[in-house]
Amino acid sequence: MAANVCLSDEHMRLGGTSFESALYRYLFPPIFVIGVLGNVVNLCVLLSPTMRSRANNLLLALAFADIAFLLAMLPHSMANYSALAMNYAYRFVYLHSKLQLTWLANWSSATAIWIVMAVCVDRRMGIKSPLYSRKDWSARKMAVVLLLIWTSTGLLTSYNFFGFHCFRSYYCKGTQLYSICYSIASDRWVNNRTNPYSPAMREYVQMSIVANVFLVVVLPMIAMAALNAALLHELKKRGEDPLLKNNTSCCESRDRCQERKVAVTVSAIVCCFILTQGPSAITLVWNMANGSSPTTNAFVYNLRSAANFLVIVGKATNFFLFCFCSAHFRKRVVQLCLRRWKHCASRGSAVGAKTVEESALYSEFGSMVRDKRLTPPSTSSSLGATSI
Image 1 (cartoon, rainbow, N blue to C red):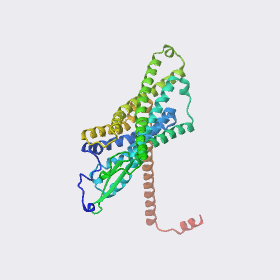
Image 2 (tube, one colour; image 1 turned 90 degrees about the vertical axis):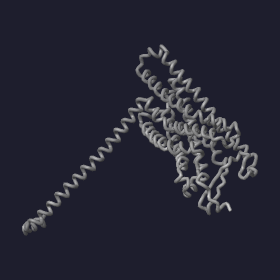
Image 3 (cartoon, rainbow, N blue to C red; image 1 turned 60 degrees about the vertical axis):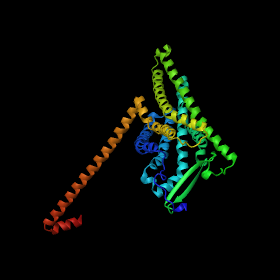
Image 4 (cartoon, rainbow, N blue to C red; image 1 turned 90 degrees about the horizontal axis):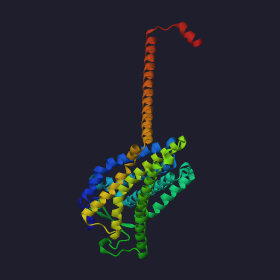
């Protein structure tokens, strides 16, 4: 019986090839730490009152999306360690939540793409129209925009949750749990059986995959590249405009300088975003063109794994781009670090002073007790103490 058969360690692996496993075992942990800490610093800086603006609020949402993506990818990385992959409890939790984690990761990634595109549109309009840059969105309008992005991307990527059917089997007298998942839209099924899902359901999943590829990956990438090129062109044109160069208004000059700095920072983020997301988009389109069938070629699988891992690397770069492109951001980071260091130092000094004070009180109390033991009792002093 299959329940009495014990699978080998190779069959029990939760990762893909050795190359993919090495990426998630050795490279993902430091990238995860850098990405989470960097985005937390971004949140601390962008939440400060002096940094609140329309573009920075969108970048704030981007930091949340990147943190959610990295957290969703953490269990996948942990599954590549043999100690956890062979652990029954971890396998049970991971295999029963793998589809939800995949959906959360793709949802967060899609949200980040659309937020970056919204930042591109905002900066393009801000550079094109100075009046637009001086108008700020209300909290309600910002919440509506972000809610629309989160909802639409969640619906577009929801096929990752219901578009797969996972079969789970128990081996080695119930001590080994094995799982394999098939796409509902696939013609191939377990044990060469016929796909039990209706043609309408399979067509819906297939259309969801196509819509996700074009609306979440291809079109936003093309739009971001075009908007970024237009943004750089507008910056160059404004820098060469003699009327703007000879403008003597201090306030307008300061506003233009601030707009230019923000635009340069956004442009750097978009360029890095396209470079890290582009290869994954190409492999996704290639996979869709081949019918979304599982890859059997090890080289193609490793190439796709490297492209997907490049997306993870991109989630950890925003902090360095902020520091490299924005002097004000660097100044705010230094101020936050110094403020935190002074707070810790003041708390340490207060604790030390309290300890010294308590030691002095204990010493004084001990000396009083010793003096009382050495001094003979006096009747008058006792009466006086009583009268007081």
